[in-house]
Every structure is written in structure tokens, then in C-alpha cells.
Length: 177
Image 1: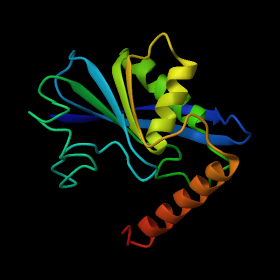
Image 2: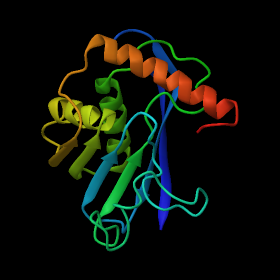
Image 3: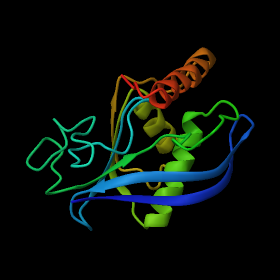
Image 4: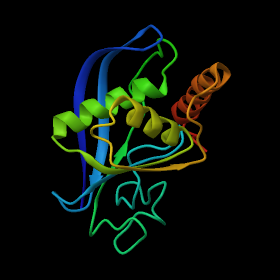
């Protein structure tokens, strides 16, 4: 059984200037309550729908995250997370860094009252997991980083901003593919 979890983070000041107005931090929990928590984050187009979901048919990593799978949601609780800005953001006020994403994730975890046993991140999600581990070492469990560097180049931050806008344009045009 999966359930969405979210908090209204209020106006969220970004590390490099700008503010996300009325920032809503949203995740999706899979697996049994109280089981060890694994956070799974993918690239910029990935979101909270990690495993099979009846309303969306599938998740972006459902071959790996399912009952009896490599990340077994019958033994672990798994949290998928939506990167900022959310779908309802009408404008993007500036560069959103991996440290910004990590701070948002930490706020969600604090609200839920849970700590991760492990963070798995690939691509942008891996960079966010590394930023989380750097900023919150006392609450970080094991790390599994796939295809990510420890520090983004400024051009990478800029390109991700453009990529987010392209993804949003596709969704708004009714053609996300």
C-alpha cells in the first residue's frame, strides 16, 4: 500500500537567491509503517512515484522497487520524493541547488518523524543524496550513489533549470514524452 505525504513548507528561501512561494514538499511512502526507511531519488524527471501505482500504472523504478524485489517493499519502507519546483509552481524564481533539495527533504523527514536507514540516488538524485549526507551526517544512514558527482558545475545547475522547464512545457502541452 502506498500513501502520499506532504507538508506546506511555506516560503522557502533558496541558497542562491530567490524564494519558492508556498513550497509544498511531497513524497510517497511504500511498504510497512515502522520498517527501515530507504529514500530513493532519481534524475530530475523522476518523482515520488517510485514503484507500481494503480493510478499511474507504474513507477519510474518499479523493476527494482517492489515486493520481493531488490528493494523489497514488504521488508522496507521506501520514500520517493518530488524535487522542487512542484507541478503547481507558476514560476521558477532562480537556481535550485541540490542543497536546497536536501533541505526540503529534511523538512519532510522531520515532519514525518523518521530517519533514513539508507539513501539511494541516481543522477540528480545522487547529487541530492550527497548534499543531504554532507549537511545532515547525523541522520544519514548508508548511501548508494549511482552516476552522480559530489559537486555540480555551475553550467550543470543552469542546464537542470532549462531541463525542468522543458519537462514542465511537455506536461503543460499534454505531451510529456
